[in-house]
Image 1 (tube, rainbow, N blue to C red):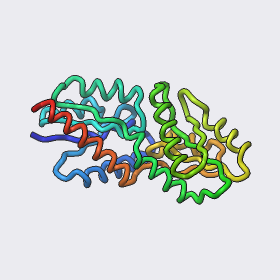
Image 2: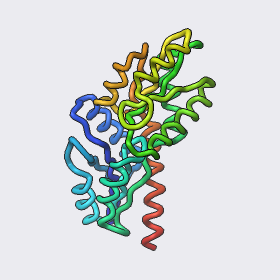
Image 3: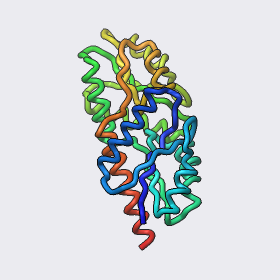
Length: 233
């Protein structure tokens, strides 16, 4: 019986974003030798997650790992629906964040940007109408603040919470240095573009591809596979 890890992302029309997700999926495949790894999407691109899960369970079992940083509609509805049709044969893992390795990647991206003493930092997320997603972003901001030893403001490209432009403007009023935006998005695309044009002096690169993010995918997969196997025993 074959187990399939389905790496499920949002989908994008941005070529750089597609390459980033493909590279991340390739990194994941190298970390789970012997496991079939396939891509799926909840929007914009094909194949749809419902179709990939349906095909995978005909071969054996499937674990859908959301290549999404927070919970929200796509996790709670699209992915949950795709696996819910196959109890005992398909399961969904948790989204990628919050996670210590996500914080580590954000810290590394900030260091690579040349952040200096006196610079203000804004963590910029895509945003969601789901309150749980906003809470998760705030948790990431607290973890990052503890890592870098300074205050982190939070802004959102959409959904609830402070808009990125307002967060950057408020940070600039308080800062004697530059405003650096830590991009809490997985790959280039619409939201990364919004963050890059929000008025900050520097916006860091998205989180993927990065082997540390691939490591989170592997750990999410392994935890959910253990649960699936335990339920079937």
